[in-house]
Image (cartoon, rainbow, N blue to C red; front, side, top):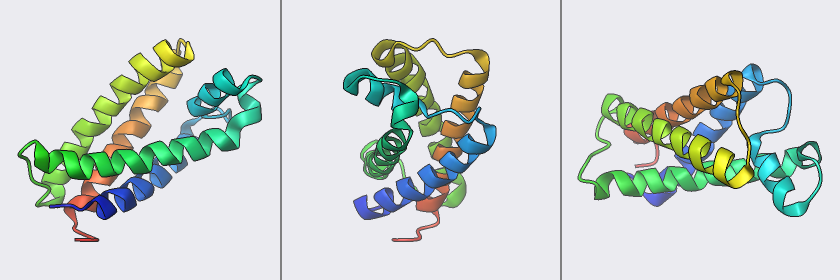
Length: 141
């Protein structure tokens, strides 16, 4: 069983990998979390690129712990890299759907275009697979 600490570490690693992919694929603009910060703090999302990245990192680390604790509670096991990466893939897709439907549209009020949805989907799948593989490898078991 993966520990909370392993989940936090896996979330950190997966978020870093995800962010690198996001920077390579992205348009150079701030992450959607910068728009969330701007919505509540006022101003332009460009002014909140770094706080948005920090917020995204926090989300990713916490989501890693949720995965590490939640998978065993659901009666599933992270007992191999392949199984854990597959479960991580499913988790990444869930995070993508929740991120697009709830955070981007309902909370922030964004209507993402096709390119943004493609990038958003890709990076969340990368996040999930890396998180699952990290935990399945038992790096911190």
